[in-house]
Image 1 (tube, protein in one colour):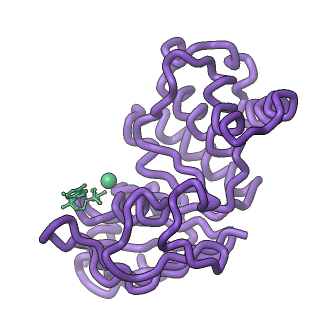
Image 2 (image 1 turned 120 degrees about the vertical axis):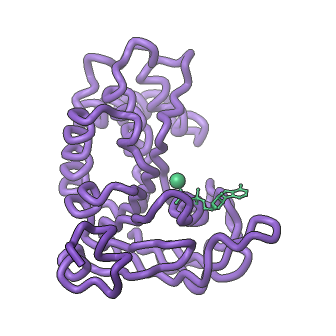
Length: 238
Ligand code: ADP
Ligand code: MG
């Protein structure tokens, strides 16, 4: 479960074309990083996979099913945002269980799911706290917990570390890598940080002005960049 493929995807906002003919195959279980400068279309592409933006043309498939015209709820995905977007009036446990409650899961089952996930993320001591009583790193972990409890085929991350200080960034990055090792869930991860890309990515897709410049395993991109843009972006002397 969890393959994602984009086929000739284009996206314009009004008269402005922001995504140009992007085709991309992400395999089941793969950790795929989308990297590129600010404004290169990373978030838009991720939102297209999530169903939060429609495409101007092209197709989006998840698990070999054409989901191009389906809303986010009917796609088997969960998104972790840059801003944690936790509900301020709900406890950590309520935040984590909310989507399951909306989906009509029985209370006892929600409690068990939340407990298991909290244990995995070492959030158990924090379950009854409100978001305002959490540190930035803890909030980001709750935000991941909210995605994990839903047991999706695909995780989508939009610069999840960008609001954390340098030390926490390294820690949470390690937690995300661990999580992927343990759960093996297909992940699409947006960043503009080359270290994040190189440490997390099994496949790296370099975007520039809405186009894919190069896609491949980190070492291939590092050793054999197609042009100076890719080389300089990934830090190879050119
Ligand atoms: P990135 O995440 O790589 O920084 P984005 O996907 O957010 O880039 O944006 C790509 C381009 O699309 C930018 O030029 C941005 O201004 C434009 N864009 C994004 N969202 C909208 C929108 N809702 N309306 C108009 N333009 C947008
Ligand atoms: Mg963005």
